[in-house]
Amino acid sequence: MDKVINEIHRASMEIAEKTGVKYHSADAQDILRGHGIKVEDGVAYFTEDQLMDWVKKAPSAFTWYARNPDHDVQIGKGIVNPAPGYGAPLIMDADGVKRKAMMEDYISMCRIVQNNPDLSINGGVIVQPDDIPSERSALLMFYAVYLTSDKCLMTGSGDKKQMYDLMEMASIAFGGTEGLVKKPRILTIVNTNTPLQMDGRMTDTLQVFAEYGQPFAVTSGAMAGSTSPMTLAGTLAVANAEVLSAIAFAQMIREGTPLLYATQCETADMRNAAAAIGSPEGALCYRFSAEMSRYYGLPCRGGGCITDAKKLDVQAGYESMMTCLAAMESKVDLMIHGCGIMDGYACMSYEKMMVDFEIIRYAKRIAKGIPLGGEAIPMELIDEVGHGGQYLLEEHTLEYCREEPCIPRLSARGSMEPTALEDSIAQCLAEYSSPAPAAAVEPKIKSCLMDFMEQKGIERDILEKIDGWCGLGGSGRQGDDT
Image (tube, rainbow, N blue to C red):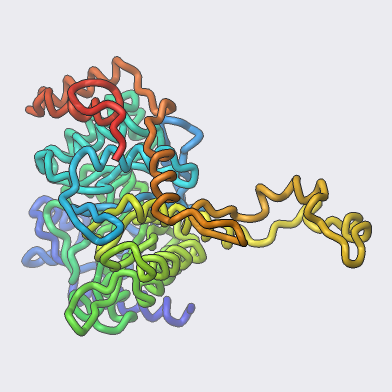
């Protein structure tokens, strides 16, 4: 492992200095030059000393604050924090039928995540709704998840104008700009553009988030064989150079900006050049992403319950379990795509969210290991029961039967007549989809957020529909569960 990590680092340093990383933002080029980085024709060339000096300024851990302190998330402490899927434009049902995602889907999925005890992170771009304007989508989705959830919030990305507006909204929601900077509240993904580029939109997002001290996951989604070398070592070397470049750039904007290292790499299937989502190679890359992040003293994002399956089938199950376990065992700090994602990141599925919740519970139980202490080994009881006895009715069994085993919600066991999977999923969906009273928002803050969005040209009827879908009245269908 150490040999591979050292070789990837060495190669990345050579790539950063010899080939460089192209920044398409003229503003970013000026900032890099101003900090002594050689920039020619938009390409930034870093020496190893320059790159490492800036990367070391990023914190090794930070707290991500929720509206409800019970859901605050510790990043960089070896705790795996699952988050929902991200960026899918489509909804897929269990049989593989697809349709465009809508804002009502986004809100329904936010409500489901809010009511799941294994996730403390909500929002972002769980789906990309087709029925809201893209130039205001980050604002509208932030508003919706803020109304729906009191957990840690993810957001979308955008150009500088939309990102500055988003920061103003977050400042309204969380007690002003100073409080927002002091206690990071919103997190997004900043994707590199492999091979070896940073586009304008992602650079804008990075700059604004860094200015306000809000965290983000710098992520390379390199695909071995198409956007990066076919070999995983070559892919990781390219991805590492991209990610470290962006991390260094972020620290030039604001030293100490909290962020996460991520190489969410996959391989390409050479039979059709498609990304092989849910592959063993992807699982290996999550593992090495975690190792590389620790090498640089940074928190890590990676993995999830990821599959390229085209319906809810056995492929969806084994690929998702494999990639989830890889992330859990590697102790990544943030596991985006923790539930619902399918078909090469193109689709979210309500049914698969339920299956992935079960996978997360199983994976967490495996990660928990075999606890000791207390009456974990009940010596007196073992002696008392002796030879050929039974433990079923013992007090010790009653005491531990709800905390030692992971009791499934979907799986059939034993001789009992199993409930049909679709019925179990429907029951779970009904439970998770109910409105969450814990997420209640102060009316004054809600009113200020609505006023702000109206000033930015967002029509009142859109906001009222969102209120309705959140179960707060308005013209949407209050309490309607998907």
